[in-house]
Image 1 (cartoon, rainbow, N blue to C red):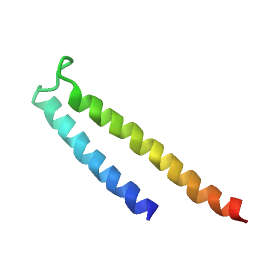
Image 2 (image 1 turned 45 degrees about the vertical axis):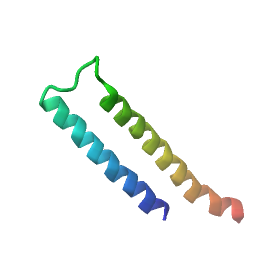
Image 3 (image 1 turned 120 degrees about the vertical axis):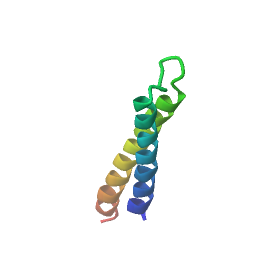
Amino acid sequence: MLLGYQAFHVAVLMLMGSYVIARSWTRKLHHAVRATLDNTALMWHCVTTQGLIDALTVQLVPVALG
């Protein structure tokens, strides 16, 4: 279940990244208007942190329960 949840967020992140790349290629990504880039970076950090927490949970909970 955790893997499916993580995979969903990775898929959303890939869509967001594709959108940022498309805006960059069309030269619509500027320093003054950077909400798209900031939100994608925030999502990247959240998904990465979530993945690390999920991996630790899957590895450490069985050890803690014996």
